[in-house]
Structures are given as structure tokens and as C-alpha cells.
Image (cartoon, rainbow, N blue to C red):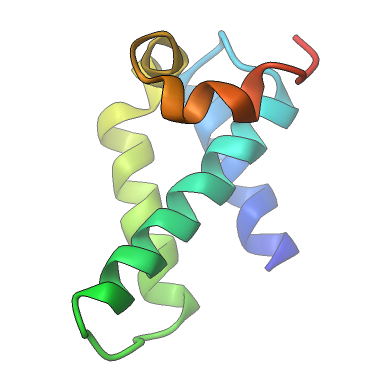
Length: 86
């Protein structure tokens, strides 16, 4: 998992210079977990890490440059970033 998270965090940093590596990594882990949880709750069969990686990568490409703004609008995620270094 480490290699997936690290690679995706670096891709997110390329899209969003407002994030530190640690915050980018946190976003990747949250997006990864959110996708897998939602997929499972929907009763879908697990299709592997590669599929999850593709989905998270797509989200990074589509929304990555604005993720730093999302925390201010959604307090659900604020707790994950409150104590992160800048």
C-alpha cells in the first residue's frame, strides 16, 4: 500500500502546490478509504488495489488542485488536517 499512497501523493502535489507532502498523503489515504468503503457498502465485489488506484488518480486529476479548499467547507475532514504540518 505504501507504494500506491506515495505515488499518488506525489501526483497530488504536482496538481496542488498548497499542500505539504503529509497533507497530500492524508488526502490520498482518505480518498482511497472512502472509495473502498462506498464500493463495499454498495455491495460491489472488490476489484483490487489497481482499480482503487485508478479511481483515486482520476479524482486527483479532476479535483486535486482544489482539495485544500474543501477542508474549509467540510468540517468532516478538518480533523484530519488540523494538526498536520504546513
